[in-house]
Length: 483
Image 1 (tube, rainbow, N blue to C red):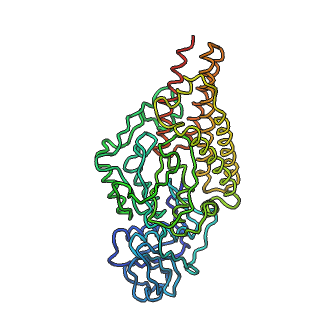
Image 2 (image 1 turned 180 degrees about the horizontal axis):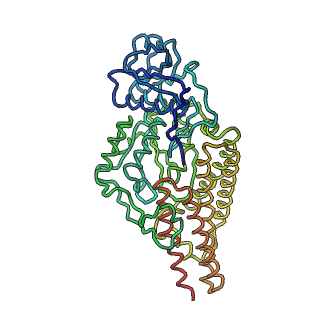
Image 3 (image 1 turned 135 degrees about the vertical axis):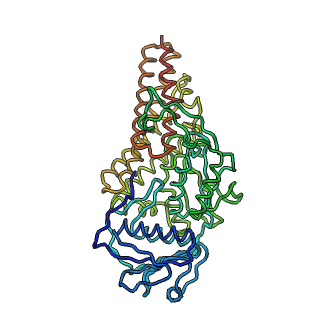
């Protein structure tokens, strides 16, 4: 999934000077670096920093910081709360300002957002239409947050959860969460980071390409002791304070199955009632960009709806007419998620028996399996339709969902075939037993191979590793049971 890379700066790009506070904090210096990156990426600008001094060479001026020059602060004539931030045009130039250093960083990201930049968990996407550079006409003021605490909870003790993520993986995610204005992270207590048992990913497996030649899937850290402390320090540098445990008064928003199911799932998020805030947890985080985007924006605008947030997310980076197909696709998967929650909340949750229990049973396949399979097929089709309509830019993001939903479709085919093999086995119908077992193996292999084409992080690779361990290999072993 790509995103921003280094761009060659054109000689005719605008010359911009960022006026900063000479006593800027570490977060404010980071904000200046991020603003420089945005100006270069969006406008191919030539950027200079000027601590405390306004240039006289005629370059465009952006005033950045929590503490502004007196004449600039007077022109703003506004007082912000700690989380308040703004982007406003003034006679002195553009002002990007926050009520605290962290809010100033958010104001930088708000400037990028106003120019079409979108922040997803895997990285940033540029708008498909290049914006025109100007410092005029900005009047964005977010005085306060209706959800003061926006917490990310590191969750999951399986290979598919965040337990398998190393420091660099978590740092990348934290940087994206900072762009989404999350301000707290809940970590396992010191020394309590979950251990993930290594999984062999050699030999005949499905989706082997996802592992890049590695012999086993494991947490990339040599030792997870102290990992929480390192992540907490990195989070603080981005303005996210740490909490060892969730605050008792924070409602938890579980994106996907709360206990870490491996199939893509969606749940309705919002509307948000004013309160202390929320705590978000997710396992396969790539599934949940629309929800995280909505929470990020609705935390400062309670009137925003999830439907409008999806349009606001997709249109700048995909083009017109794409959000509608995305909405239909996500809606179909939400229906499939509701079926799983109603009929079998533990379906596809990591466990040694998670797949082969379907093969060991001779009970008729439940009707909801076929219904869920049809809904994932609809979700897949809508994602491919959206991908066809989309212009260059965010197609990798849409393709990720298309492949995830295709994976789910093949997984359910494997489940159905495994059950049919189990029924034939119980009836001693050897021909059907062998045929259905072969179909289950083929469907599982296809599912993992398709998923590997878009596997982007440790959770994606963890899903593939777990399903090889608990599904594909046991199916191959079941062949030995055949007469």
